[in-house]
Image 1 (cartoon, helix red, strand yellow):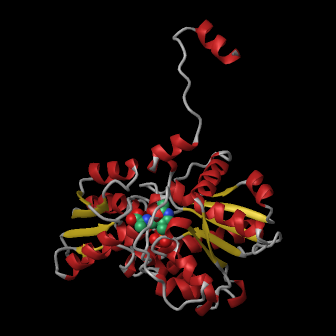
Image 2 (cartoon, rainbow, N blue to C red; image 1 turned 180 degrees about the vertical axis):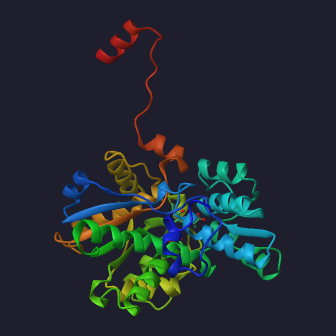
Image 3 (cartoon, rainbow, N blue to C red; image 1 turned 30 degrees about the vertical axis):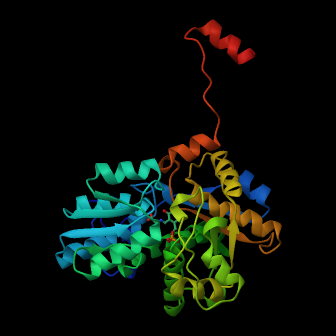
Length: 361
Ligand code: F0G
């Protein structure tokens, strides 16, 4: 269609297919945030807002590729486990591709906007009495048994599409600063994006398009209550220990067993990056900071900015760095979190005099 060769598909040469099942994903904004840049104290700060994708998260970039592969394979049922965003994207892209979708969600731990999307796009929604990691265990067994085609980030075609986040960030920085960013800070759940960005940069280095020394430092941020990757980085461990108990307000990254860790740990280490955990309060503060620049994100997304602020305060990030923070999902994904973090509505009478009196009191 008209969209061919744009957004994610502008990078078709780096993808396993030349066209996807598309709703015009990618080409997201790389916002300037002058006040935040100043208060964090870095040379340059840009926000790559993946919440501006069709279903409101970066998952669309992976689904446009993954669902197209499933269609080529002639699969009729697609499935995923999800903290919400993957299920919304799978439901939308699956229905666009004319396939059935099945999603397994942790009961009571998925934000309202995401369930609404999965529901209206026609997914069959199974609410599992367990956390995300349990949902992923089950759906992997279903897929292995031939019940459905798996579209979690264990599916390599998803990560191929997500590489384009990294390519767009590099292009944006080259256009505006004539140099790639020193560092990319991103929230980590299953570490799919961390793996995908690392793969994108390695491919550029192998192709002679990017010097090894220019590869941005991949810097992962997790919530304190769900930080197995941070633990592994801090302990210099070869493997990530699965956390059975996880909790955070940032439900999108309420994950104890980051399945892409074997690919992501080398990505963080070999680029000279790091990983840090932030509290729910720090996440909410960062969500307000972004909102104060007109950028609406869900809690997990704000973790990137919260992590950058903390690393800068600890002197791990230098003041001369140019940094991109990835914000992965839109504010409207989690309206309850936004309302709790923001101003309360004030009841007033239905007449101007009463409103004026209220404003002046
Ligand atoms: N941010 C948001 C908003 C997410 O939805 C997710 C993952 C992440 C960050 C973490 O990304 O896995 O690449 O490290 N959400 C998945 C889901 C788990 O089911 O929607 P990652």
